[in-house]
Image (cartoon, rainbow, N blue to C red; front, side):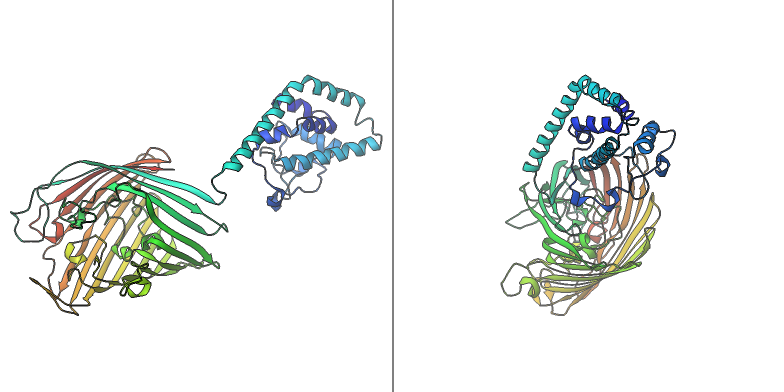
Amino acid sequence: MRRIIWNILKLSPAIVAATFFSANGAIAGEVNEQITPVAELSEETTPMAQVTSVSQFSDVQPTDWAFQALQSLVERYGCIAGYPNGTYRGNRALTRYEFAAGLNACLDRVNELIATATADIVSKEDLATLQRLQEEFSAELATLRGRVDALEARTAEIEANQFSTTTKLKGEVIFAASSPFGDTRADTDNNPNNNPDLDSNVTFSNRVRLDLDSSFTGKDKLRVRLEARNIAQFDNGSTSTSSPRPNLTGTRMTRLGFDGDNGNDFGIGEMWYEFPLGDALKVRVDAVSGEYNDNINTFNPAFESSGGGAISRYGRFSPIYRQGDGAGVTLTFAPKSPISASVGYLADNNNNPNAGFGAFNGSYAAIGQIAFQPSKAFGVGFTYARTYQNNEGVNLFDSTGSALANRPFGNIATTANHYGVQALVSPSSKFALSGWAGFSEATAKTGLNQGNLVVNQGDDAEMFYWAAALALRDIGPKGSTLGVIFGQPPRVTNSDLTEDTDTSYHLEGLYKLPINDNIAITPGILVIFNPEHNNNNSTIYVGTLRTTFKF
């Protein structure tokens, strides 16, 4: 085919025009199946004025294989134009609109030459050659015409049956083989001899997420997530009659970062809408299962993802970003400077109209963060959160840390002030060191006298936690990550009731191995020393092999 076009290009513009016309735009349709409407053509694609010398094209060199053909068309016939920036772009695909414009220019020039009787330029021999070529290659031209007709039919079918012009489907699927192991389960008493044995059964489970992302202005995004999963929570179990859960390890410190079980029934995992206001303000409205770690910079990019980051719940990011889970709004002001600011409000029981619930009278979490990030190599954030949780389910650190840290006064209404600092140092794209530290003050809002538990309204408790994480990228295949995370989960350090007597330590190692752009395998090991901040508890391990598919 290229040989045919080359022979044609050596002839007059009339031959070029007539031959392309006979092909009915086949070549244009072959190299560019998608037709760009005239209204969408940018200024960059607007042809420049007629050139008078091929040297006016900055991207055409005398060594180019088509140089002589272009030189002949420009200097002999004058029907070649370029782009406003002085380029010809001979290697890019030709749209049908560009073909029509070029064809019309050549035909106008041919008519002008014929009208002025320039017989020495456009000869009868040229026209006879054109007729012979049309007859000789009639089969090829008919084939091209048929291919274009088939492509147009396929395009029409796709346009008629496409899912949406504004919505894209993205997905993530996790297959996980996991098992906790060790001597005994953890508990909170001081007797090391009565702990039950830890069952070391291997589980194979999954999580599926389907994200429907829509945009209506090109700068906004509406996401609806469908989620199904059956990944066990390796924790201290649940006595809920609606969703009972066995006591597997005796502590929530062993939870995975991607766990959760809804019986593999698809439901709405999250739903939010994000849009800009001006050049510096971004607004995000969460309608279902909003979380601050999705809305605000956590300064732990290597490990924050549940599908591709840390294997543990605590290792993903600071617990201060786990405050709140529901509906609300988050505002991020990020001008073109190293300093940015975020504020947010989430309500857990926003859809409940009963007294003590709703968007403003029930459990809530308000957050504010000032971030300083002059470059990708360094960043630091200072964060404050104010929370209120009613007695429907107090969980101050969203199942990270000890049971006492999450419920220092039992299951009664509690307010808390949370303070956190997070930092990231990444001197190169292959090395990153991140970490966080947090301090919380909780206050009991009501009293309780139940057996050995006596709580007075106004009782206080203080909690502290910290962690450091190291990420080494491209250790092996490009895109791989070797990670180590070490820290202390939330611990009650001072209380009017009961304190955690000892200190637990969280150690995690993982290696994310990309198979290709869509598949990654991550083996990892989680070690909890002195679970539940109790030296009487034996060390517990959790081994995991996570395979993540993205599409």
